[in-house]
Every structure is written in C-alpha cells, then in structure tokens.
Image (cartoon, rainbow, N blue to C red; front, side, top):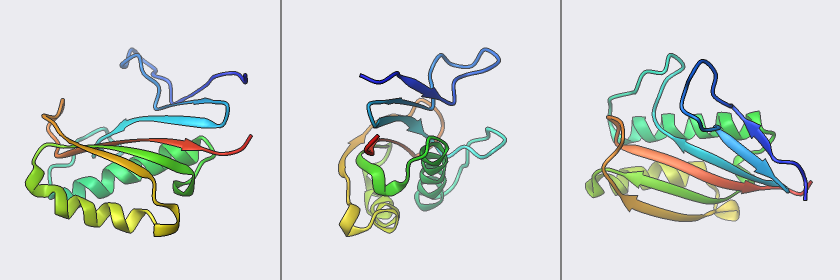
Length: 126
C-alpha cells in the first residue's frame, strides 16, 4: 500500500478536512460548493452554481494531478428536485459519453446557502 497523501489541508483553524485524499491511485475529493476565490457563496441559478461547484472540483482534481477523465464516481446533492434538469445539462457538458462516471444524486437540505454540492472519486494508475 502506498502512502496516503492529503491535498488542500486546512490552515488557520479551518475545518479538519482535506480538499482531497489520495491513496493507491484513488483520489477522494471532498464536497465542493459554489464558492468563489474569496470564499463567498454564489447566489444564483442552478446553472451558475453548478458550473462554479464543478470548476472548484476541477481545481482540486488538477491540483492533485488528475483530470475529469479520471473521475469514476460523482456524488451530487441538490436542494430542490425541480432544478435537476438544469443541473443535468451542466453535468452532461462536463463529462463526455466516453468518460461518463457513475453518479448518485440526492435531494438534501444544504449545510450552507447554496443549491448544489458535488464530490467525486477519481482513479489513475500509479
């Protein structure tokens, strides 16, 4: 077994979570919400919030040396099921049919004031 590598560990007393944890070629990306670079939540349409949440997920993946093509599973939490179709359009634009991941989508109240949160699991050969 290889060492466990943590990416984006908290600094300055943040939550005790890593943005991603890597082990044996697997990368587990923590939930990403629509926060901008200043840490502010975007309040907008499902499309805008989903785009930013995915942009944040891509930054974490790329920071660890992975791409969207390495993603094998995506977890999605949306607060309003009426937004599912709009979210699905964003999702379809992010993943090609050739690299479509497994996915679970759950309706859930959000822990912060947003419409969507996404996480993923990615894999690549060592």
